[in-house]
Image (cartoon, rainbow, N blue to C red; front, top):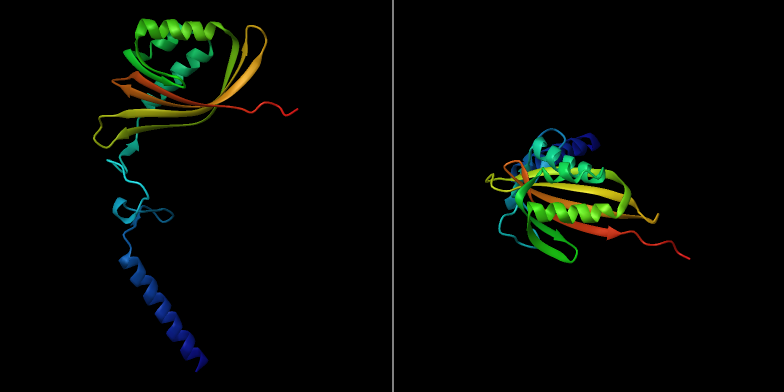
Length: 183
């Protein structure tokens, strides 16, 4: 009798598992990943284009990283060659669109106050909109520098870099200063 109950319970369990998989709206990508479809997720907020992004190009990532590396090394001429004729900049306290010569002057001034700089990259991601009209590379990194007076400092940064036709046309930078040492 006990064997019969176990057999019935096993059959019911297997049947219910099969039934559940037929009811779900999840898409199975491979044997280890289950990705919910847009219609199966009830987000607490709504946006115009949910699930709008796909993986972008490695070439865009290379452009963004090369511009940052040139700035890190103090090579402003090399840095600005990756930017378009006009660039929309968004920093803490700044939101402006600058022509290339003004961008170069701004980068030259900001970098001239720095004796040396080091970038410790954490991660990056390149994305493109599903309609292929908008491309971004996001960089997550720590910037460490010493100014010309010997003062050292650092900041955590996230750069969202918009690209078009292989040129940077937008830079939206978010920063977080590290807390000072407790006394």
